Image (cartoon, rainbow, N blue to C red; front, side, top):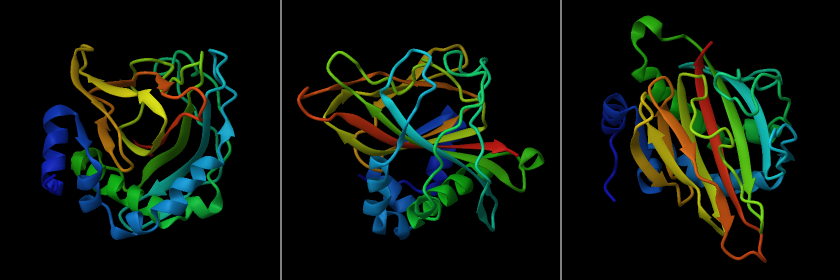
Length: 241
């Protein structure tokens, strides 16, 4: 797979409102510190807390959440805070402050996370018109594990096709274990599908212009019902502070 130059990524974002970037291409865009320190970063998904706010009653989602202030010069972790989405953006679980376990300190400071946040800033800051570009972005990081069991599919997006109510979204696959499906679809402002793909390998990613397009992911199902089955992703959102 050929390298994806940074300019090609930003041009695709401007043209389509999203870009699907495979792992090989992501490695050329990310600093070496990400891949060099990846094993310990990915292992942290084994220690997430249960999401107890699921309006559908499901117990298939585990997560941690932390917020950061990101500028050209610094990445600063903010005091722990709730995650909030209005019901306009999340009619299933929105409308309340949701408190999740924070990122562990060593993950919030991890070289892999810092490299991912730095790439997100570089891409999204450049795509933002100078007149509306903030000095510092409000960035939220979500560690998600979606589990699938016999008789209970895991739903990465229980709210269905949606926007997140931010400016930009980066979704990065960490691991797929014993699952099928989990297909991402991208839709334009009229909800017409304009892209469909599956994040299959660690570091496969999707960059999304949340103001232009909707996105959703199909439920995941276990391949072998006798074995653990899950989908681990990092979701990072950028919003004007």
